Length: 98
Image (tube, rainbow, N blue to C red):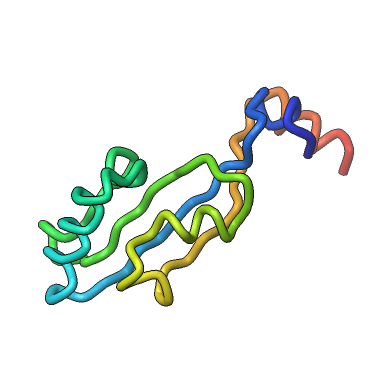
């Protein structure tokens, strides 16, 4: 899809899944805060509910740039996926094209 079809965003969006263990949790949060990471304000965390994992949707030029937003300590376990958001009209168009 071109950027216009993606809703006008010129930069691709990536979902970042950041699994970690309880021992890494505080260090990861401290690292993100110390670096003033843009991911921190876009992240949701399951840590307080027993699931040590974080999720964020970020704008990045490519997958590697998105991955580099993740704290180095958990970068190897992070999963980055390019994602799109669809309107009802786009979904209807996809059905017609199929």
